[in-house]
Length: 290
Image (cartoon, rainbow, N blue to C red; front, side, top):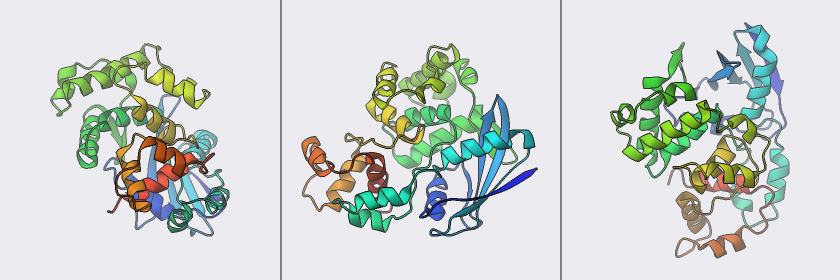
């Protein structure tokens, strides 16, 4: 057992992080205890890290713990990346003070972009969530993981690409997957298991190259590719203009009569770079409870 305390630069609102994570029934997020358990694969070995907040928005501090001391350095590196602790949220907020999203960034002060716990899991979740309402999307993903994944001490791990590659489409159809969605999930997993799609290489590729390589795969369009960039890789400057949620949030925030056109979205967002991802994130958050 190992334990490490980490202080990071403010502002950082971990309560908002836990609130978001708790929407997914697969996550072991305890809002009252300010704790989340993270399932990690390191060199094909499963391990669980626990992150607990002991600070505040203005003085963010965390205790991270794990079981295997030999994995401590790698676990800390991954946790730092997943929770984006090195991202200067104050600098980003200061940037948006000079834009038309100033009030939005004041309201959601200290909200970070938190990544999905595995890149393969992120890709699978994005494919499953395509064209579904959020509640059923989470239900379908939960069925997928609890049927084919594994559980350790109450923490669920996504199955591996190799495991899913061996399935028949009918096995997913039994979970209420559509035929096409079953094909997309299994066929993409087969590409990964066969080495035709190397997820590790995506981290070193520019945004445009990641998108162009992913959209060549049947069942992955720009929306899915952009979500993988955002929530799988943590890219900072993405604005998915085709996303209905973004369009609705812009309509509400700017009191528009109709959802904005792409040209109008370009005009509204012209001063948001290089942090378009944070504008997207905060716009999504602004309508989550509406």
